[in-house]
Length: 480
Image 1 (tube, rainbow, N blue to C red):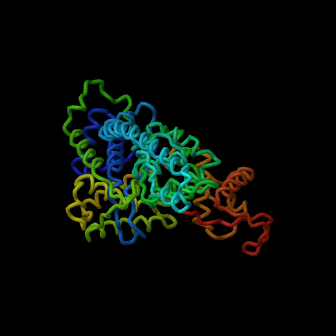
Image 2 (cartoon, rainbow, N blue to C red; image 1 turned 120 degrees about the horizontal axis):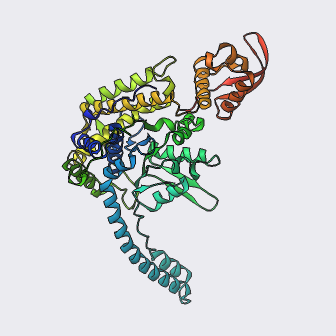
Image 3 (cartoon, rainbow, N blue to C red; image 1 turned 135 degrees about the vertical axis):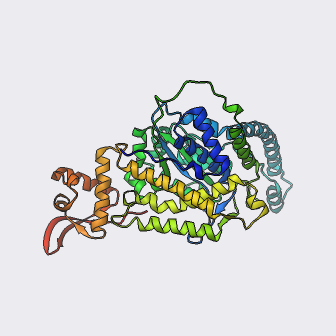
């Protein structure tokens, strides 16, 4: 396996760069893992405050990111997150104390409301219009918002409940990614619904749940995800055909750093006394304390202002996006990670928004027309290239079991060579890459998998290039 690329820490804004170096010093974790934690923390505190607007994207986009670190046990990802998210943890603790106080007030107010409601309902002297009006005038007290900023392992149903009854911008943060990737929300029965729901939240911050007795529509929400998982657990997501074809995997920024286990020095350390971390935490607190831009009359529906791009930033972003697009054509550099490459330009715009807002939380307040600079966009592009290079490196790694890799490679080869056309099973044995020219039974098993995931469609008896075949399949373009 090729050597992991270096995270371009030098391109990060000073506050974030210094925090990365401090984490590396105190935790002795891989630098890219430290940077991953710092970026995810910055995303969490920024995502509710602004969108990013790019001329070629259909609408302003959230600043939310989906992130995954693949690391073996003992790599100290939890320690990185604990230090990077210390300000978030403190803010959550304060919210919980306030919530308990507000809940007691709510319970008393609700009891008074119920008593008044019963009184109106039982008043026989009231006419129907009078009773109707008095009941309308009664305002049922709303419970306080749930004090949740980070959730660890919610399924989609639980997540939607939190977004409905809690803060408008939250994150799924856990260093035990197996609890999420292998939990209830990702079982076979609910996988499609979960993948679709999380993708919609990433796309536009909206979601819906329709049941026989309940309909829930959520708008103006933000969800960021930062997971860490051991290789064998992460392979379940990275190698999942459904998640890949729906573009879910492509939304994730994935890293698998070179291990520092066995190279660390046992020594005392005092992160609490490190001014670099203190400055980073102070900035996190500033952003967490800023009032969320809510729709008038709403408690938890965001209407964030947008960060635009300066002309220089637009030029940098456009060049990056065009390059990513060009390198997704057959034979291009990013073909093996096409889904990630086609999403990376948008991820880069989001990262640029985070870098801008974290370094200067007042940018939008004092200058509504504030834009992302060319320098910041170039930094975001460097980070995007890092994650794309990592995705490409991991695609060929044993993180995916050999059969899953073979299925993925077969799907890519068929799409490149026969997209929209008919094939017969023996085409794979005759014309496919040498390592995919397996026995007939293996080829048919792989074809069945690709049919199940919508990459092939059974077409029965057909004529191909003047020759009749009893069994044919049409190669379908994947949904990205």
